[in-house]
Length: 198
Image 1: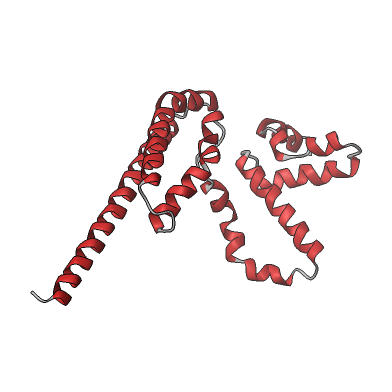
Image 2: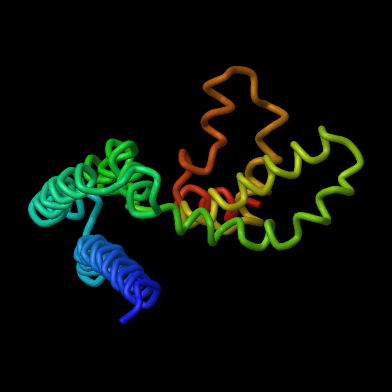
C-alpha cells in the first residue's frame, strides 16, 4: 500500500473515530436531557402543583443533574475547547447556574419554549413592525403584546383583561396601583366578577 493511501486511510479512520466520539458524547448528553424531560412529563401527566413539581424535581431531577455535571466536567477536560463538542461542553458548564435554576421553583420551566411559542406570531410578522411609524409606537405595541401574552399565561381572557386594564388605568396614582393592574396580580375569578358588573 502506498503512503498516500495509508495516510488517507489513517486520516479517515481518525475522522471517523473523532466523529464517533462526538456523536457518542452528544448521545450521552441528550440521554441526560431526555431523562430530565421525562420527569417534566410525569409532572404534567399527574397535574402536580408547583410545590409537587418542586418535590418531584428535588427527588428525581437533582441527582440526574449532579451526574450530568460530573460527566460534563470529565468530558471537558478530555476535549479540545475550540471544537464543536468542546464549545458545547464549555457553554453548558458556564451556564450551569442558569440551567439548574428551575429546580428552585415549581413554577419555572426548564426551558423557554412557552415564551418562544407565545411570541412566534409576532416574530413571523416582524417585518410589519418596521412600519410602526415611530420607536415609541413600536415600544407601545411591544408592551401591549407582552401584557396580552402574560394575561394568557395567567389564564385570563385577553379581551376581558384589556377591558379591566383600560377601565382602571385612568385612576392609577401610585406605583403599587400600577403593579396591581399586572396580569400576575389578577385571578380569573376576580376578572369574572369584574366582567359580571359591566
